[in-house]
Image (cartoon, rainbow, N blue to C red; front, side, top):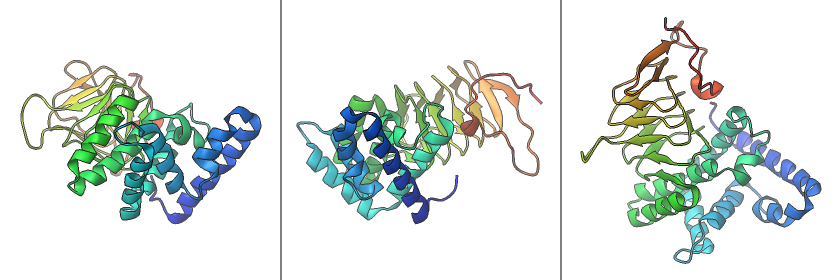
Length: 274
């Protein structure tokens, strides 16, 4: 996925506002909601902080305080909002229910959970760990997504449905990865230190997949639904089963492959091993 430039960021925001204006015409009952979440704001940064704060609001930390925290993170690290924009594109390009850019922004908890993680991760790096853990807890309660703020996650991430997703503290998820619901990137027990999976670029983690321990899932690999990965997975292969084993592979030509599982979102097992 391309780097998010200022021009791309503005283009995505303008597209969202155009879509939402049409929504107001098509469904007047939602006009107040759409105005509050999108149309009264001047940019994606302001609108996103409002949306997340509204969703994460609670008696302990009301929305106005949550929004202050989110805006502080956005001002300090502009890459957070740029990553959010690339996540929107990932939803639009890969998720068949997303026929508009505004859909994940307004309605999809996988997108909201990922953006909550991004703020919590910034807090974690600033050594504001109790507050980072609080946002993790709120995300788990509100979105049923539990991502440790210490995990390192790239841009262009699709959390499709996202329900029941768990990502551990030392996990790494590189750019352009697609993850479906019920996925666990966890440890194998009570070990400490670097103990969670490393998911490389272009990987598809299918529904209910479990990857345990400090193991690598190689670039453009695919983990089939319900599989349990306990050993490293090479690049450009599909693994399936309990424990997972290679069931198919894609030949690579000139150091690249045209089959990117994260992009085509194909969970079926129909390729022959080569």
